Length: 291
Image (cartoon, rainbow, N blue to C red):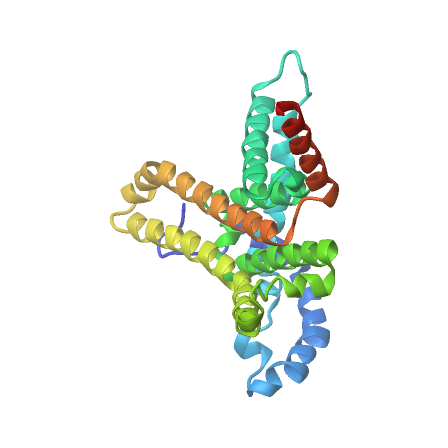
């Protein structure tokens, strides 16, 4: 959101990283990865890696969004570690209370959406939430850009969510059982429902990624346009005025991505059989006691 006049620019930290390690990585890409892209992928479409990715140079050997996302991962770990501090049950710090509040919110969401048994998926869900939120708000600070404002990052997150919930479905139900749940309970329209569900599931990574990217990219573009209306005043005061709105958008987009991922997990994950049996026994005991 805090951008130089004229829109996006390359952050200094990206230039610094590429200055020191960009040249050897560029040589490696030209020697190994570029021929793979050209010979096995883009040759079938009559194009080349350079036309798709741009020229291979030391200055862009490591894309800005890759560096920003790595920084987002490091910042997420650092922020949680700082907020956690020295855990205390009797005298918790403000940071610990903040983490506990976020933990309870996510925990209740997991229980409401997935069920009591879904708490075993909490670490992955919480990782999505923390990492995406930090990535979203990075664009609010000088020298940083939001990696989620790039489609490559958001599609990678969407594919990760897609692979994870399908892994859960196959692990819990087996491959045949996982595929069978796409067909629905009505046998005579099962083939039609199966095709629709398969198509719907395969576009989920793209809808997750494009939704997150579009909102974060639009937020940065709007802020950039407004900041360039009457510099330097709009470059300084407008971002400060829009800061609460930008944080709200970052939080909402984090919630949407995390909630949809939980919904997808709830479709393929079910309570263990002994949980159902325990409930059945409790209901029968209540009925006997009532009688």
